[in-house]
Length: 132
Image (spheres, rainbow, N blue to C red):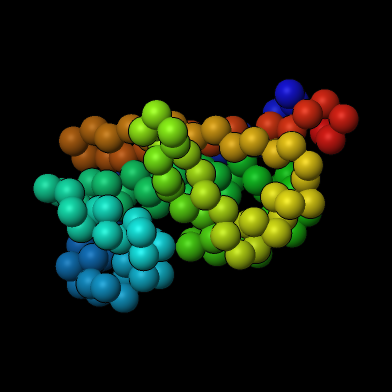
Protein backbone atom coordinates (compact mmCIF):
# COMPACT_ATOMS: atom_id res chain seq x y z
CA UNK A 1 0.00 0.00 0.00
CA UNK A 2 1.07 3.58 -0.64
CA UNK A 3 0.18 6.45 1.66
CA UNK A 4 -1.88 9.13 -0.07
CA UNK A 5 -2.34 11.41 2.92
CA UNK A 6 -1.99 11.76 6.67
CA UNK A 7 -4.18 13.90 8.90
CA UNK A 8 -4.02 14.81 12.57
CA UNK A 9 -6.19 17.07 14.70
CA UNK A 10 -6.67 18.10 18.34
CA UNK A 11 -9.92 19.52 19.71
CA UNK A 12 -10.49 21.36 22.99
CA UNK A 13 -13.18 19.42 24.85
CA UNK A 14 -14.45 22.49 26.74
CA UNK A 15 -14.90 24.35 23.47
CA UNK A 16 -17.14 21.54 22.18
CA UNK A 17 -19.00 21.47 25.52
CA UNK A 18 -19.71 25.23 25.26
CA UNK A 19 -20.74 24.91 21.61
CA UNK A 20 -23.22 22.13 22.39
CA UNK A 21 -24.54 23.94 25.50
CA UNK A 22 -25.06 27.11 23.47
CA UNK A 23 -26.48 25.59 20.28
CA UNK A 24 -27.67 22.15 21.39
CA UNK A 25 -29.11 19.83 18.78
CA UNK A 26 -28.41 22.33 15.99
CA UNK A 27 -24.65 22.10 16.63
CA UNK A 28 -24.75 18.34 16.92
CA UNK A 29 -26.66 18.10 13.63
CA UNK A 30 -24.03 20.25 11.91
CA UNK A 31 -21.01 18.23 13.10
CA UNK A 32 -22.31 14.72 13.82
CA UNK A 33 -24.38 12.12 12.01
CA UNK A 34 -27.54 10.88 13.74
CA UNK A 35 -25.74 7.70 14.82
CA UNK A 36 -22.81 9.70 16.23
CA UNK A 37 -25.20 11.98 18.14
CA UNK A 38 -26.99 8.97 19.62
CA UNK A 39 -23.66 7.45 20.66
CA UNK A 40 -22.19 10.56 22.29
CA UNK A 41 -25.44 11.40 24.07
CA UNK A 42 -25.38 7.93 25.69
CA UNK A 43 -21.90 8.60 27.12
CA UNK A 44 -21.26 9.98 30.61
CA UNK A 45 -19.42 12.97 29.08
CA UNK A 46 -20.88 13.61 25.62
CA UNK A 47 -18.56 16.55 24.90
CA UNK A 48 -15.47 14.39 25.32
CA UNK A 49 -16.67 11.84 22.77
CA UNK A 50 -18.05 14.49 20.42
CA UNK A 51 -14.69 16.27 20.48
CA UNK A 52 -12.95 13.03 19.47
CA UNK A 53 -15.36 12.66 16.55
CA UNK A 54 -14.81 16.25 15.42
CA UNK A 55 -11.04 15.66 15.57
CA UNK A 56 -11.47 12.42 13.61
CA UNK A 57 -13.50 14.12 10.89
CA UNK A 58 -10.87 16.83 10.51
CA UNK A 59 -8.04 14.26 10.47
CA UNK A 60 -9.79 12.16 7.80
CA UNK A 61 -10.54 15.31 5.80
CA UNK A 62 -6.84 16.24 5.90
CA UNK A 63 -5.76 12.72 4.93
CA UNK A 64 -8.10 12.84 1.91
CA UNK A 65 -6.94 16.29 0.71
CA UNK A 66 -4.63 14.94 -2.03
CA UNK A 67 -7.68 13.33 -3.71
CA UNK A 68 -9.48 15.38 -6.38
CA UNK A 69 -12.61 17.10 -5.07
CA UNK A 70 -11.84 16.56 -1.37
CA UNK A 71 -12.26 20.22 -0.45
CA UNK A 72 -16.04 19.77 -0.91
CA UNK A 73 -16.32 17.17 1.87
CA UNK A 74 -18.68 18.21 4.69
CA UNK A 75 -18.75 17.33 8.39
CA UNK A 76 -21.42 14.64 8.11
CA UNK A 77 -19.83 13.09 5.01
CA UNK A 78 -17.35 11.51 7.44
CA UNK A 79 -18.61 9.31 10.27
CA UNK A 80 -16.79 7.57 13.11
CA UNK A 81 -18.09 4.02 13.33
CA UNK A 82 -16.97 0.91 15.18
CA UNK A 83 -15.00 -1.68 13.26
CA UNK A 84 -15.59 -5.43 13.68
CA UNK A 85 -13.44 -5.58 16.82
CA UNK A 86 -14.87 -2.36 18.29
CA UNK A 87 -11.99 -0.12 17.23
CA UNK A 88 -12.85 3.23 15.65
CA UNK A 89 -13.25 3.13 11.88
CA UNK A 90 -14.38 5.52 9.16
CA UNK A 91 -17.72 5.52 7.37
CA UNK A 92 -18.03 7.76 4.33
CA UNK A 93 -21.21 9.36 2.99
CA UNK A 94 -22.14 11.91 0.35
CA UNK A 95 -19.20 13.64 -1.33
CA UNK A 96 -16.59 11.75 0.69
CA UNK A 97 -18.07 8.41 -0.43
CA UNK A 98 -18.18 9.58 -4.05
CA UNK A 99 -14.52 10.61 -3.91
CA UNK A 100 -13.55 7.30 -2.31
CA UNK A 101 -15.38 5.32 -5.03
CA UNK A 102 -13.16 7.02 -7.63
CA UNK A 103 -10.03 5.69 -5.87
CA UNK A 104 -10.06 1.88 -6.12
CA UNK A 105 -8.69 0.20 -3.01
CA UNK A 106 -8.71 3.34 -0.82
CA UNK A 107 -8.27 2.39 2.83
CA UNK A 108 -8.67 4.84 5.71
CA UNK A 109 -7.09 4.12 9.09
CA UNK A 110 -8.19 6.03 12.19
CA UNK A 111 -6.94 6.36 15.75
CA UNK A 112 -8.65 8.40 18.49
CA UNK A 113 -7.44 9.53 21.89
CA UNK A 114 -8.78 11.56 24.83
CA UNK A 115 -6.98 13.47 27.55
CA UNK A 116 -8.43 15.62 30.30
CA UNK A 117 -8.65 18.76 28.16
CA UNK A 118 -8.31 17.60 24.57
CA UNK A 119 -9.35 14.89 22.18
CA UNK A 120 -7.25 13.92 19.20
CA UNK A 121 -7.30 11.82 16.09
CA UNK A 122 -4.93 10.65 13.40
CA UNK A 123 -5.94 9.32 10.00
CA UNK A 124 -4.00 7.72 7.18
CA UNK A 125 -5.30 7.27 3.63
CA UNK A 126 -3.72 4.44 1.65
CA UNK A 127 -4.14 2.98 -1.83
CA UNK A 128 -2.62 0.01 -3.62
CA UNK A 129 0.65 1.05 -5.35
CA UNK A 130 -0.94 1.14 -8.83
CA UNK A 131 -3.38 3.89 -7.66
CA UNK A 132 -0.91 6.27 -6.03
